[in-house]
Image (cartoon, rainbow, N blue to C red; front, side, top):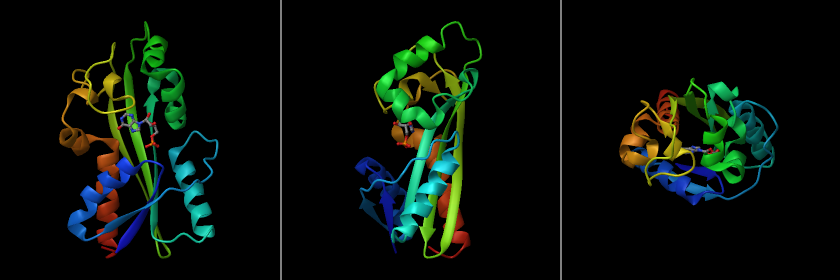
Length: 185
Ligand code: IMP
């Protein structure tokens, strides 16, 4: 079976390919735009994107949307995480968090998948904390300021360890389980 990943990021296709390899699923890469609706929910962005792509004739595909939700900032940057990273960056987030005691946050990843007429939407969550300073040189995006246990940042732990607990890793395994339940893989 071939599953097309709709994304601008070829790195994501590689990550999914690694997870799906043992199920004989070949990942295709579709570098194509879809509207990202203005909403506070990743699920709504994914749902609307799937409907649009299906309507435009795309079949057997998956889309995903992730973000960092900081409790003390009422969920910001959330669905605006890519924008937040491009504009204020990690330093800006740390500034907003100066003097804030509640450091709790979570990464969320929502994946939507359409195979034929079958529609699957899953959300993986990784709870953790915003650190007081950037730590580590691995990873990307908010990794240096996010820690699952309040100590080591995501940028300080090996990728396979990150994947075993990350929002994207969890969502991917949820998707694989659901595809297996429905006998699609
Ligand atoms: P996307 O929807 O997966 O492209 O993620 C949106 C934005 O959230 C990215 O531009 C990153 O800034 C941030 N993000 C998502 N996942 C991660 C992660 O695992 N580590 C760090 N930042 C992330």
